[in-house]
Amino acid sequence: MNNFLNQLRYKLQRFMQGRYGGDQLTRFQLLSGLVIYLLSIIFRVGLLAYASFAMYAWAVFRMFSRNRVARMKENQRYLELTSKTRQKPKQYRLRFENRKEYKYFMCPKCHTTLRMRRGSGQRTVTCAKCGHQFEKKA
Image (cartoon, rainbow, N blue to C red; front, top):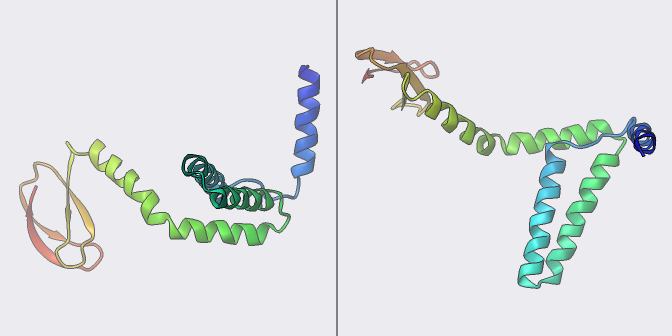
């Protein structure tokens, strides 16, 4: 049985050589297709089932595509469009982890998030982005 699985894995690796494979956009397509399919079951709307099938077909097409440059451009565009929504949770987690060491605040002029070490007292802060100077207590 182990030999059979190794042969199957080898054949799959050979088949996927030169093909694009999975990336973040493919994972999003597969997960959104699953959610749409579950909604089609819950609300009994057949059109949603076809939409989920289209999402799956598009994801499989992307994974098996040999046009790597086009697939990379698609994935890069997806990452650019979703960068803010993906980075917000990371920023909040980092702020929470560092809450005892740093105080976070926003520049009143350009609204850039800045941080200052806690316990440093009243300081004149210079924004790194716009150069605006203002007083802040840590």
